[in-house]
Amino acid sequence: MREDIALPTPYMIAYTEGAIGWMVFNNPERRNAVKAAMWEAIPAIMDRFEADPAVRVVVIRGAGESTFIAGADISEFEQHRASPEALAKYEANSDEAALRIAHSRLPTIAMIRGWCIGGGVGLSLDCDLRIAAVGSKFGVPATRLGLGYWASGVKRLMDVVGPAHVTEIFFTARHFSAEEALAMGLINRVVPEAELEAYVRSYCAMIAENAPLTIQAVKRTVQELSASSTAADIAECDRLVQACFDSEDYVEGRRAFMEKRRPVFRGR
Image (cartoon, rainbow, N blue to C red):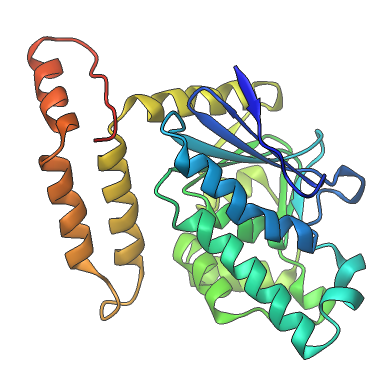
């Protein structure tokens, strides 16, 4: 059953549906370009999802059928990015939103249909998995706009696709097909457009059946190992692994295996 979450802006929609928390960027008139109010709403949405024990996975999507997210809403730049003070506030809010998605204990999936451009690519990289429909298009137009791209954003993309593809993406600023994005490792899967939502839902069902503490430990370990060797918090990774072995879920997993049945994990 769908349960909607009340939000202070109409440009974001959030609701839970069984084990899935849905976050929808709702600005279809501007190809779901991200407004300042949308960045500000994301931490509250993630708070609600993470506080709900029934939610096992978060799916991020764009409203409508033609666009995932087409970057930032440039029409707001004069208001929110014209002065150093306004720019600092805007970037602090967008950074916090990105970190809340990337560092959530919940696994996250970007469900991509249509245009995934600029900040849309960045938001998809904040997710753990990216599943796209045939016909989707990807690109980062920074060099066509003359804007700078912070090292943290370049590194996040480089960690996924490698240096050679990063330079091609930025230097050409061209649009890449879903098949090209799959070949460079930018996305995990490409599926027919008509099957996209059903495919994502099936992935969510698979994830929801698995042990949440183990998923959390693996997610944190991947993040730490992706950091520089001096910054990696291996002790925290080890703590999360030990928590898996100490959990009721580990007992349930062993018993279910011996009894030849599906385990029922509760995240504790």
